[in-house]
Length: 262
Image 1 (cartoon, helix red, strand yellow):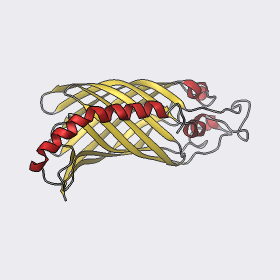
Image 2 (cartoon, rainbow, N blue to C red):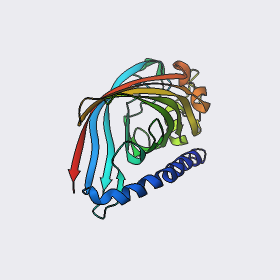
Image 3 (cartoon, one colour):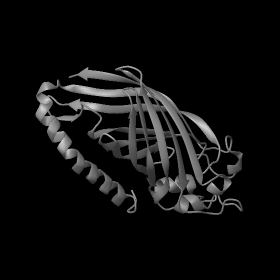
Image 4 (cartoon, rainbow, N blue to C red):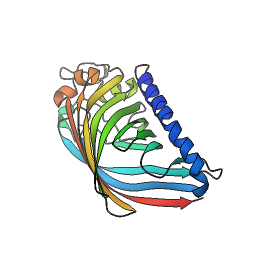
């Protein structure tokens, strides 16, 4: 992870941990009434994203969904549980589709980048009408860099079933990631794509809004829409010049709640 990426993500996780300490302590006091086990949501959905970073064309890709709601150990220590408020940790997963000339002819001369799977951790601190969150993920396959996101949301509820949210997003990446998707090697260089090296740091900034409909105690449907603007070396890349600095996304998914006792 590059030095420019580490401080922002470290500060975020430290702030979330401090905010969440009181929540964990309160849960410990009531944990005697909670059986050991794990409660999580598992689901699947689809996401429309640019066909490659910097593209103006959108493609639809499958997205796995996994969120931990509560973890209670046999000794009574509890993370999560109860309402959505407080501090929580969960796995973070993302998939980046293959980038190839076959799908994007405007990138002729650039090497194919295989599909990448990103695995990491997400942290969140939430109150009744506000939350801050962050993710850090490491890539496998198409890239081996780190990518992270920091965000904040205003939350509005309409009855027991509808929840709306929206707020700003900041996206970070290290140089391994940015050079993979925005860099051009000497071997790939051409008049259209001069040799380019892309540094890590803030990659984009934007907004996201979403809605969740709770169908019953176990099933829920979600949808989100987002816009971001590429910044820094990502915005200056000749690859981005073939598409747009403005990046749009649309996602939807269905989730089911599971409660497993230890």
